[in-house]
Length: 333
Image (cartoon, rainbow, N blue to C red; front, side, top):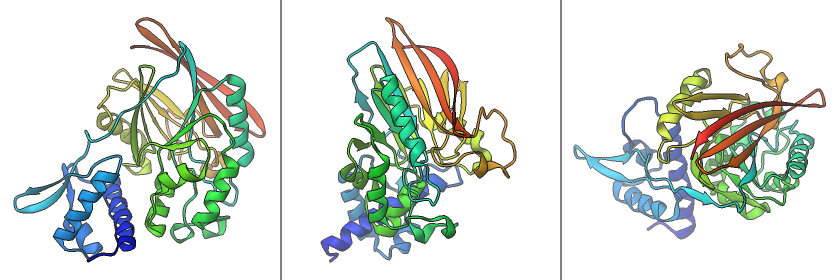
């Protein structure tokens, strides 16, 4: 019999393992390993099945298990996501997109984060979406420990409050660095950030389809493929995130801004609010990237009877100066 505290810890570990299997599974199979997770957590098949059922009741997404050829398999959960609907009572509205603040890194950039929120206030931004890696993650998983300012969960949450100054709602999809706390501290990091930080609301782990006044947006941190496959990955993600026929797919993770259109869907990769040119100076040059400075993206939507006009303003901080690039699209409702 598993006690309640231990059960909660195991549930978070199971969730983490399932998410990582989803992220880093290299084959195109529809099902993921049940046995590997069971053996790693030292559980019987019945115990793991029972815990996954509990996880399915409490989680925003489900992890169905089927018996295939006599063996339990964890199923692909493409259609298991809740679509989050938002209504802004006006025909023109503004959305801010943020990503990769990495709070807790030795050189995290509070001044830039605050500048983005201040700029958002000036522009009249109605809501923000954060594509993850709000936290830099636990010290135990850091590859560059000399650059860790905060590697403890409690201290990282306190620091996150100092970074988050907006009185407008920010809707969050955790990133891989955030999920590191799920593994080390056996916690639901999305729920914790929602509880500890004013005006942060947790949407989902990994992916969140949202609809704002008819504008369909799929948000993810974006790390299904490895970094050198970044553009291939983005197109694969488009195929994966089509349950609500999105006008726009938004992701973070790669710390580079890129905006393009494929199959009538706009694909937007967000710049980081922590890492800029110095982080990528030794990287090979990637085609199609419009910039690699620290920044964020503001989207202005004008709603007409049958179409939406979308204007993307890319806000960059380069040598203390603010630079904005603009792109415009028209989409049918």
